[in-house]
Image 1 (tube, rainbow, N blue to C red):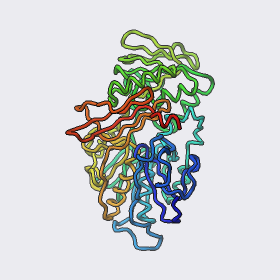
Image 2: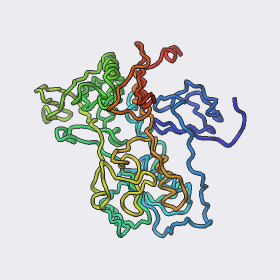
Image 3: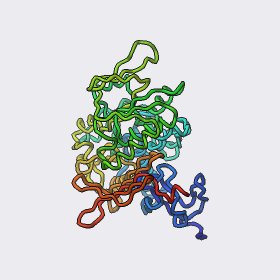
Length: 453
């Protein structure tokens, strides 16, 4: 065991963004404060998503230290300061990165919610853990704003943008900015057949709290439309909570866009063991109420004429970035707000973006782990500090299903075949190779050694 005190290091989970701090350890998992990362057992798991130690990387949040009040100001004139749009993980991470470099730069946050801080990946596994909204919140928005010296405009919407004038129009009035950071996230993509007033979706704490209240009285019959990452995680979480689950998807198998057929079959077997029903190759044509009574059941109609009677319908059909603000501001938009891959600057001067709302090379970037690096690049560029820039790498992809853990590493290609590396009744390992070099790897289930442990 290492005994050197101080000079603590931090390591970030490449799957979900959790940071292991050597100084504080992970007491809930039996790792005492002061435990060096190298001394953690190899079978230790990320407390949020469950990947192992090998999927953590050294986290260095910038070499510059914060400027104390009264010291020299930042290079950029700070008459009006930085405005951040969005009070989620991306927005607050950007604020933290800015404040680490400059203790005095004025920062205003505009957010449509209260700005409370919580780990969004926990929402898809929180119901079976019995977590309340209060337990999910790590810090209230108003407290975080006070700690970081941020002017917080909660329950406020951004409604217009003029980069030429350096102005952001909001429901609280027009704000002038020196630099603007867009961290507005993405919203659930709702097909026309799924009316928002009859179908729930889970993309933030408020939505999740509403679903929790709706399910509180008794076990319910739930239809989940969409068998992607979120749909699969929610299906298991709700089934573990005692609800009856039916999953519908337009594809023949779950996680069809991500997994090869052999891996999807393992998912189906796991669902069968949990009592989760899967309706393959089904598109929903309508969702209606059975009658006008309070709490009336929903009738989900498929293209084959089937009628599914349920208590709650949940939409998990993917995310989309709202283009309105980018469009009125004249920003380039390609399946998200297009950004410079090094600086995260948009097509407009002094306007940056990060998180779920951006696209790099035309591809959306909707993962938690890269946000810290994106925020670092934005903070340095917007404050005129030297920095190597952001370098995008495919994060480790973890499907948070306890009965059948799924971990994918690398950048899988639709053009390459998946090869089976190892398999038994508990675990399936596959890989993709190009010219003999490993491109991507996939682990489904658990190895016998870990099961025995």
